[in-house]
Each structure stands twice: as structure tokens, then as C-alpha cells.
Length: 325
Image (tube, rainbow, N blue to C red; front, side, top):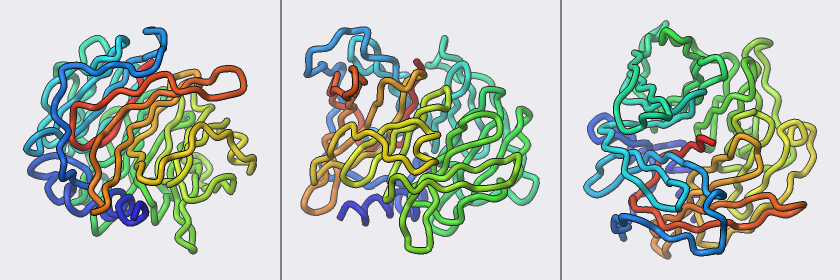
């Protein structure tokens, strides 16, 4: 059941991407039991306040509304405001980028509640009908984007003026359309092999090559530290973390947590140093619907990973998240 739900959410993106042009969203399963909005949530395990960094989440709320939320350092969710029709959220060197249709809203970390600098995406060929479902900024400000719907999947590179060129080479299939820069020339994505197995891949846009990792198979989502050195990956059963270089060499990463049979991971993100991992997860019911979204935090302590918080989410369906610390 997990495979069917995740594949429908990430590759086909049928239900909500079809609605994205009108209501703003990438494909994630709808929930039959909406999570009631909460003004705050409590950290359920003892943890210093300082261990809860700032996270920003793009999510669907009641009646299909799309909004930004942040998790502050006291473990409370704060509504940052509605972002109608937004389909993707990404990290930038000084804040976040929110995509709506073919326009990117760059917001500095000092003011996440208001629209910032707008850049229109200018495609070198015909603009795709599919929405942007993932994006990330390199240290110098160049964007990598993924577009996807039930009919197509594409990857592009965007310069600081908004000019878009197709990424070549690029994954032709992906369990989840995700992109994340490692440096100015290399970025991570997921690539599905001819056996329909999802693996981590590094696309080098300078040498026009792709290197695929054999360390972990069946990856559903990943998150990268902002320094590009560490990556966390989730399969249907386990979340792992390790140096990017080690995973590419085939070294098995360290296990962070084993997932419950009914647990679905929607998004992973990491702090800058790669010592904390943040996971949005939900619970899959017997009928395949997903509810009870929580933000979970894990920190490296010595040679182990320890859960540092578990916070209920105030939204119904998560789209993506970024860590800004």
C-alpha cells in the first residue's frame, strides 16, 4: 500500500497537481480525517529549546488552501500566511523561494510573511504544462527545478535572471521528483533504474554526467544539509543518514530510525551541519488515506541518533519543507 500511495503522490501527481493550476499543490494523498488547526504544539520529549531549529513548511489546509508555516524554537507552529496556488518551496542562501505557476517569490529569512522579490521563469523552449514541484538554490543563486504531472517529468536550470534551460542529462523516471544542490556543478535527484528501483543520483551539470549510488535502494525522499556534505534518505521502512561521498562510493549509511508499518514519510530536511534531521510523517489508515501529520526531529549524539521532538502539525497535507539553520 505504501508503494502505491507514494508513487501516486510523487510520480503521477494526479489529483492535486491537476488542481494545482486552480488551488495550488503538488500531488500528495488527500486525507479523510483532516488534522484540526492548532495554535501551538508541544514537544513531547525532553529537549532543550535551542535544539528545535526554524523550519518552514508549504502545506494544504482546510478547503484546499495553501499556506506557509514555520516551526519556531519553542516548538510552536506559526502561520506565515496564505500562498494561493503555490506548488513548491525551496531553500535559498538567505531565505526561501516559493513557486506559483511560472513565477518565483524570493523571501529573505528576515521577512517570511510577505512576498519578496519576484522572478518570472523564462523557458528557452515552450513552457511545460506541468507545475514546478521541487526547487533548490545553489550558493550562487542558480536554481534547479523539477516539473511533474501525470503526463510528464522534466528538470531545468534557472539563472539569476529567470532564464530556464533543460537539464541534460537528467533522470527520465523518478519515484519522487526532487532536486538539491551539492555545490555549483553537482545536484542530487532520484533516478529509477530499469528494474523500477529508486536510487540516489548525482547529476553533474558541468561534465554532463550522472552517477548513481548503490548504497541504498528503494528511496522515496531525501534531504541534504546546506553545505552539501550530508544527506538523509527514507525508504518505506527506514530513514538513513550519511556523507554524500560515502553513499556514492557504496558505503551503507547509518540508520536513524525504523519506520512503523503504517508510517509515511513526506519530506526530509537537515540543518547546515548535517547533525539534525527533520521528518514530516503521517499515518496510513487501512483504506489507504493518510492523517495524523507530525514533525519529528532527530539529532546526532555521539555515534547514535536520538529523537529530540515530536510535534503535531496544524495542516492537512504537506507539500515540502526547508530548514533554515
